[in-house]
Image (cartoon, rainbow over all chains, first blue to last red; front, side, top):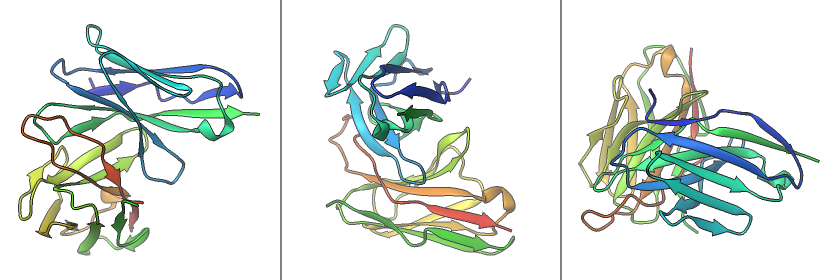
Length: 110
Length: 117
């Protein structure tokens, strides 16, 4: 079993739609969680960190469920510019290693 | 504007050649990483370094070595390139947290797409 698993998609949604991605992790000791965004042929960039209480940044909402060991990303009112691959990332306290999921591809169409 | 640069965007080498990939960051970060990214597998950690001259193996270090002689520069070396090392190579850096703190945001370079023939 992979340490971090994501549905690879692709998710094809119309503009204005709401779309949700889930990511599961296997190490119950994991302490930090992130969503990164990677555009085609570009490097990954941090989209948002995921906190225990959940957090929101504009149209994006991230949630953490420690009991079930998954994190989620919700995108509301999708824009064409949201088309990208979304990477789930999990890290542990005191270490420098973070584990990247393989990513979920999103296509937003007009 | 923070920056991580990599020496080449595209590289074509022959099997058996020695390959050097260079990464430089201007953020005074202590930690630097080398990943490779392959379709369906995501980013896999090859090596990382938390200080000058310090290095740690990641998940797939076989066939690779690294060098960190200066804080800002982290080099990945393929001693004898093989076709299964054809991949996208990404360098990243992050600042050192206080002891026991969590890993923070990683800043990535633009990547080097290496093809080994």
